[in-house]
Length: 478
Ligand code: SF4
Image (cartoon, rainbow, N blue to C red; front, side, top):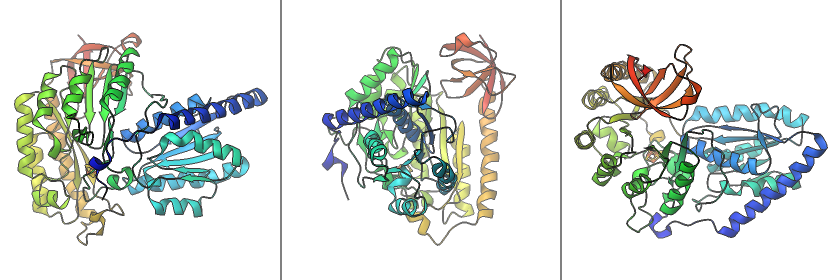
């Protein structure tokens, strides 16, 4: 198996990045000439599936497309280029992508110049690429997660040859710095600090499709966030499949704790968040850095996945129920008011009633602010999918309901304690709730709805909590 320490951080050569800018420029010229001929700008429809890292990759694709002169459209029908940035963590997301691709066949027949591209995690699986090649012959470009920066070149080849371009790198690629990005939000930004995962949890496909851990250089990250601060971004979320491993492959005494201490000095940025943290790698050094850095929010997403040590062993998580509870106590000793959220898989193969009781026990002992709960579903290619001890759907659903009942009660009780308190809220925009017309988040990442005005968007304000729900709060400007 490839070892990240052997490989280190390999960056895409500046000449390669310059070449991609040349392709972007060439396409921009083609599009400018088409605009003159047809009287409209070229449009792109991009749909992203899956996690925030995929969303961040989509922002990079949109950055490249904007550089090439494309504008974003809301519908595939209206677009000259259609892209699906796929996820393979859940099978139903894969089915959706195939459904969308099938629906585009007629559009491609009616307009052969429409370019259809698929990229992302699904494309890192050979059988998926073969399936698309055979069944969805109207797809023009297929590329994976490791060569996203080469999209301008692939698009240029398709435009010029009118033939299908398939370019999927099997092993983890180098890190591409300096490519354009178009962010979806003007207040909060995602910043990927590392790619890949070394953990091979038995239910998870990510290490197979995203490769081994590769950390970005600290200077590149700090420079990116410095620019975000200058552009009036207030909050950044550092992203990685396992951010606590940041720097281990750089081999020069860099750690995630040191990274956040550096970022804490950056002017303009008011809040720092990060995800995802693996409990086995959450060091004391990081807990102290979180305590000391005033911009690091008092919220930690710390997936436990299951409460039973036997199941955790089977999942290859490398911590026990007791280790996890002890870790939470250490965190709370240093940061008493921290909000904790978690991920839980219900009905992992071989999970007994007794195992499930351990999960409920952890919920009651830790008292998470919120838990993202998932019914276990088989992921082809992972060890857990081959287990003969699959739990029936009926049992999974029963346990799921029970888990929600326990967790929702805890979430509401925690929120009730905030009644009458004044919280710092970063105002994000209009609320989906018609009564409370503006919305924002506290440092603990809780949604607060309140009556406000447009000028407050992007500002930190104080809000007195006047009402509580299980998943949100209500308040008035204080
Ligand atoms: S830590 Fe485990 S669950 Fe998370 S991405 Fe890596 S293998 Fe998947």
